Image: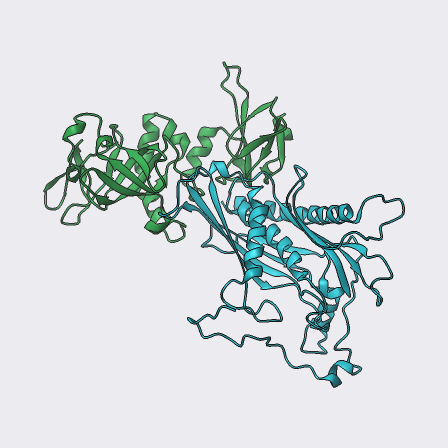
Length: 247
Length: 317
């Protein structure tokens, strides 16, 4: 059955029946048929062998190598981290984002979202995956600063808030925002709500969330030394931050 | 008319060269009325390419094939005035991007469309500020696209679609008096082109759609000297410059995969139509069906253009 699928689809193209597949991202269902809703390669995610669920049919937003179409999902996601930046991903609830702090206030910090990490790596708590994410932070940030990326000014980026009570899970009432974030820090957070008309809401109340990159007062890149402190390698001065687990 | 005080504007009137009676009456054939060389159901060829504007998240460029008389005039110019014009337009899609701070929360994608004629697009010079026809085209385009986009997949974000018309269709043959006909028929062809180009640009930007929506035009035309004697004939993809009189015209935005029309715009009197014997349809029905057929034709080009740009990106990686 999988052989009858087209390798690439354009919007409105019929891909299969809901009796055979379940509809994944990039598709929609009309009169018990699955149709593509974006242009891209058609990918079948095989069902878990033991369960009764059907294979999921999706149209990918990222363009892998032509020979990888239909390959195992883990393989494609590994290859896409190196390929071109993915298209216009919106922040959704539970998605992991990297954001730059733009303003720190007494009750909240305003950040602007640079990158939305894709669901595959975010949903997977595999430590090796997280490690690879962290390695890619530098490359992700340079790609966000790239003028070719369409969201390169704060005006065009999605704005978000980290409220005081969402900074950490313990001793929430003793949080002092100035000791958690500084303007310019790069923060990894998890979206908790689409929020109001202008801001998303982000939490850093997990060990793996918090500041991932920061510069000291002297302007040097700092390294983390504990969950709440980072140190400048040149001056040796320590500064307080809510640090993400660094591995 | 609204004056634009911030720029140094060109002359507000037309900039075409003066035509002298001796020239148009002479044997050079400079003022010969263009004739339709195509079959009634034959469409003009369409050039459509996506992804030409790197700073936009999606873009497309569309061109209609010049009519036979225009192609001949370009190859062997006898007059400074082109006998007809062919549609050329560029479409850019920006977004999804955050809504402005003043906007209210929206669980759906907020679609904004702008259609603008370049100042040099038509025989009569256009201003820099959008006039009522351009705003009208924008509204029609928005209706056509809103039915095709799956808006709930993009909460809290906006999508800007901007179309620049580089060369517009004529409303009538240029040699006719400017007010000898009632309506601006060229606008219908422009809208059909806008719909097809915008659909390609949206697919290029990877915005979820139900189907590629294509635009098509059909018209009832009478090419007779005596207009009232013969019932008008149905023609697809009409170039207004090629016909003596257009009685009625229809443009649709059509999704072939679902057999749905998202936008229908009909002008003129469609009550009288010379259909083939045994055809029981009313003129109105025949006109809409004709426009749908034209849109089906445009859809094949549209799907091929989207597929082509997709395969090109796959090849690059």
